Length: 203
Image (tube, rainbow, N blue to C red; front, side, top):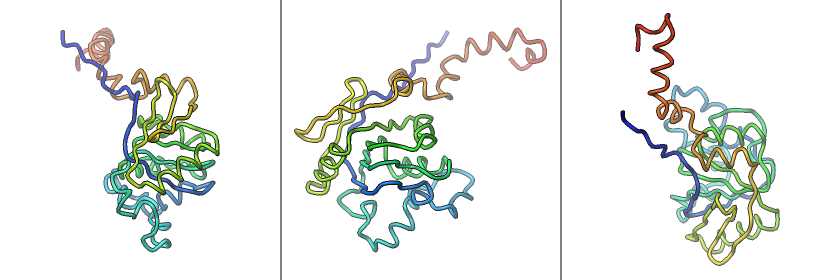
């Protein structure tokens, strides 16, 4: 019997950081409604913060050359509020974001991120301000989000972070990945299906 190993665990995210200042940045700003007509999520990364970026005239962090390739987004309070559109975290992920550090997150946005394997961790406003300042002053600085030790590290700066226990455990164990769970349990699924008279023909 083939043994399938789970590879969906999210224990450590490390990469270049990108700061985005401002409270109550809603999902319509993250990805404007006119881009929700797409059949798949492909291409959404290019449109993330489309209106904000146009208004900023190239000064938006997501347009600045030194932040290209960033994987850890640092935000302020109530990030992802507004509508429940899954396209918002999908657009961030397609751009390249793999983790978000903030003061607080809207509940549905947070849940959508967990379902995608994107950890959203929180820290105090003072810590967030310090991280954002460091990223603004040293553009190539790396940030490390450690879910095992619950710390965020930025050069010589280290601070504790928080995340709901259930969501953290899903990240560490890989159980956030519903499709991965199905694939890993395919033998058990086949056995169960074989016992169902109305489904046995398809096993």
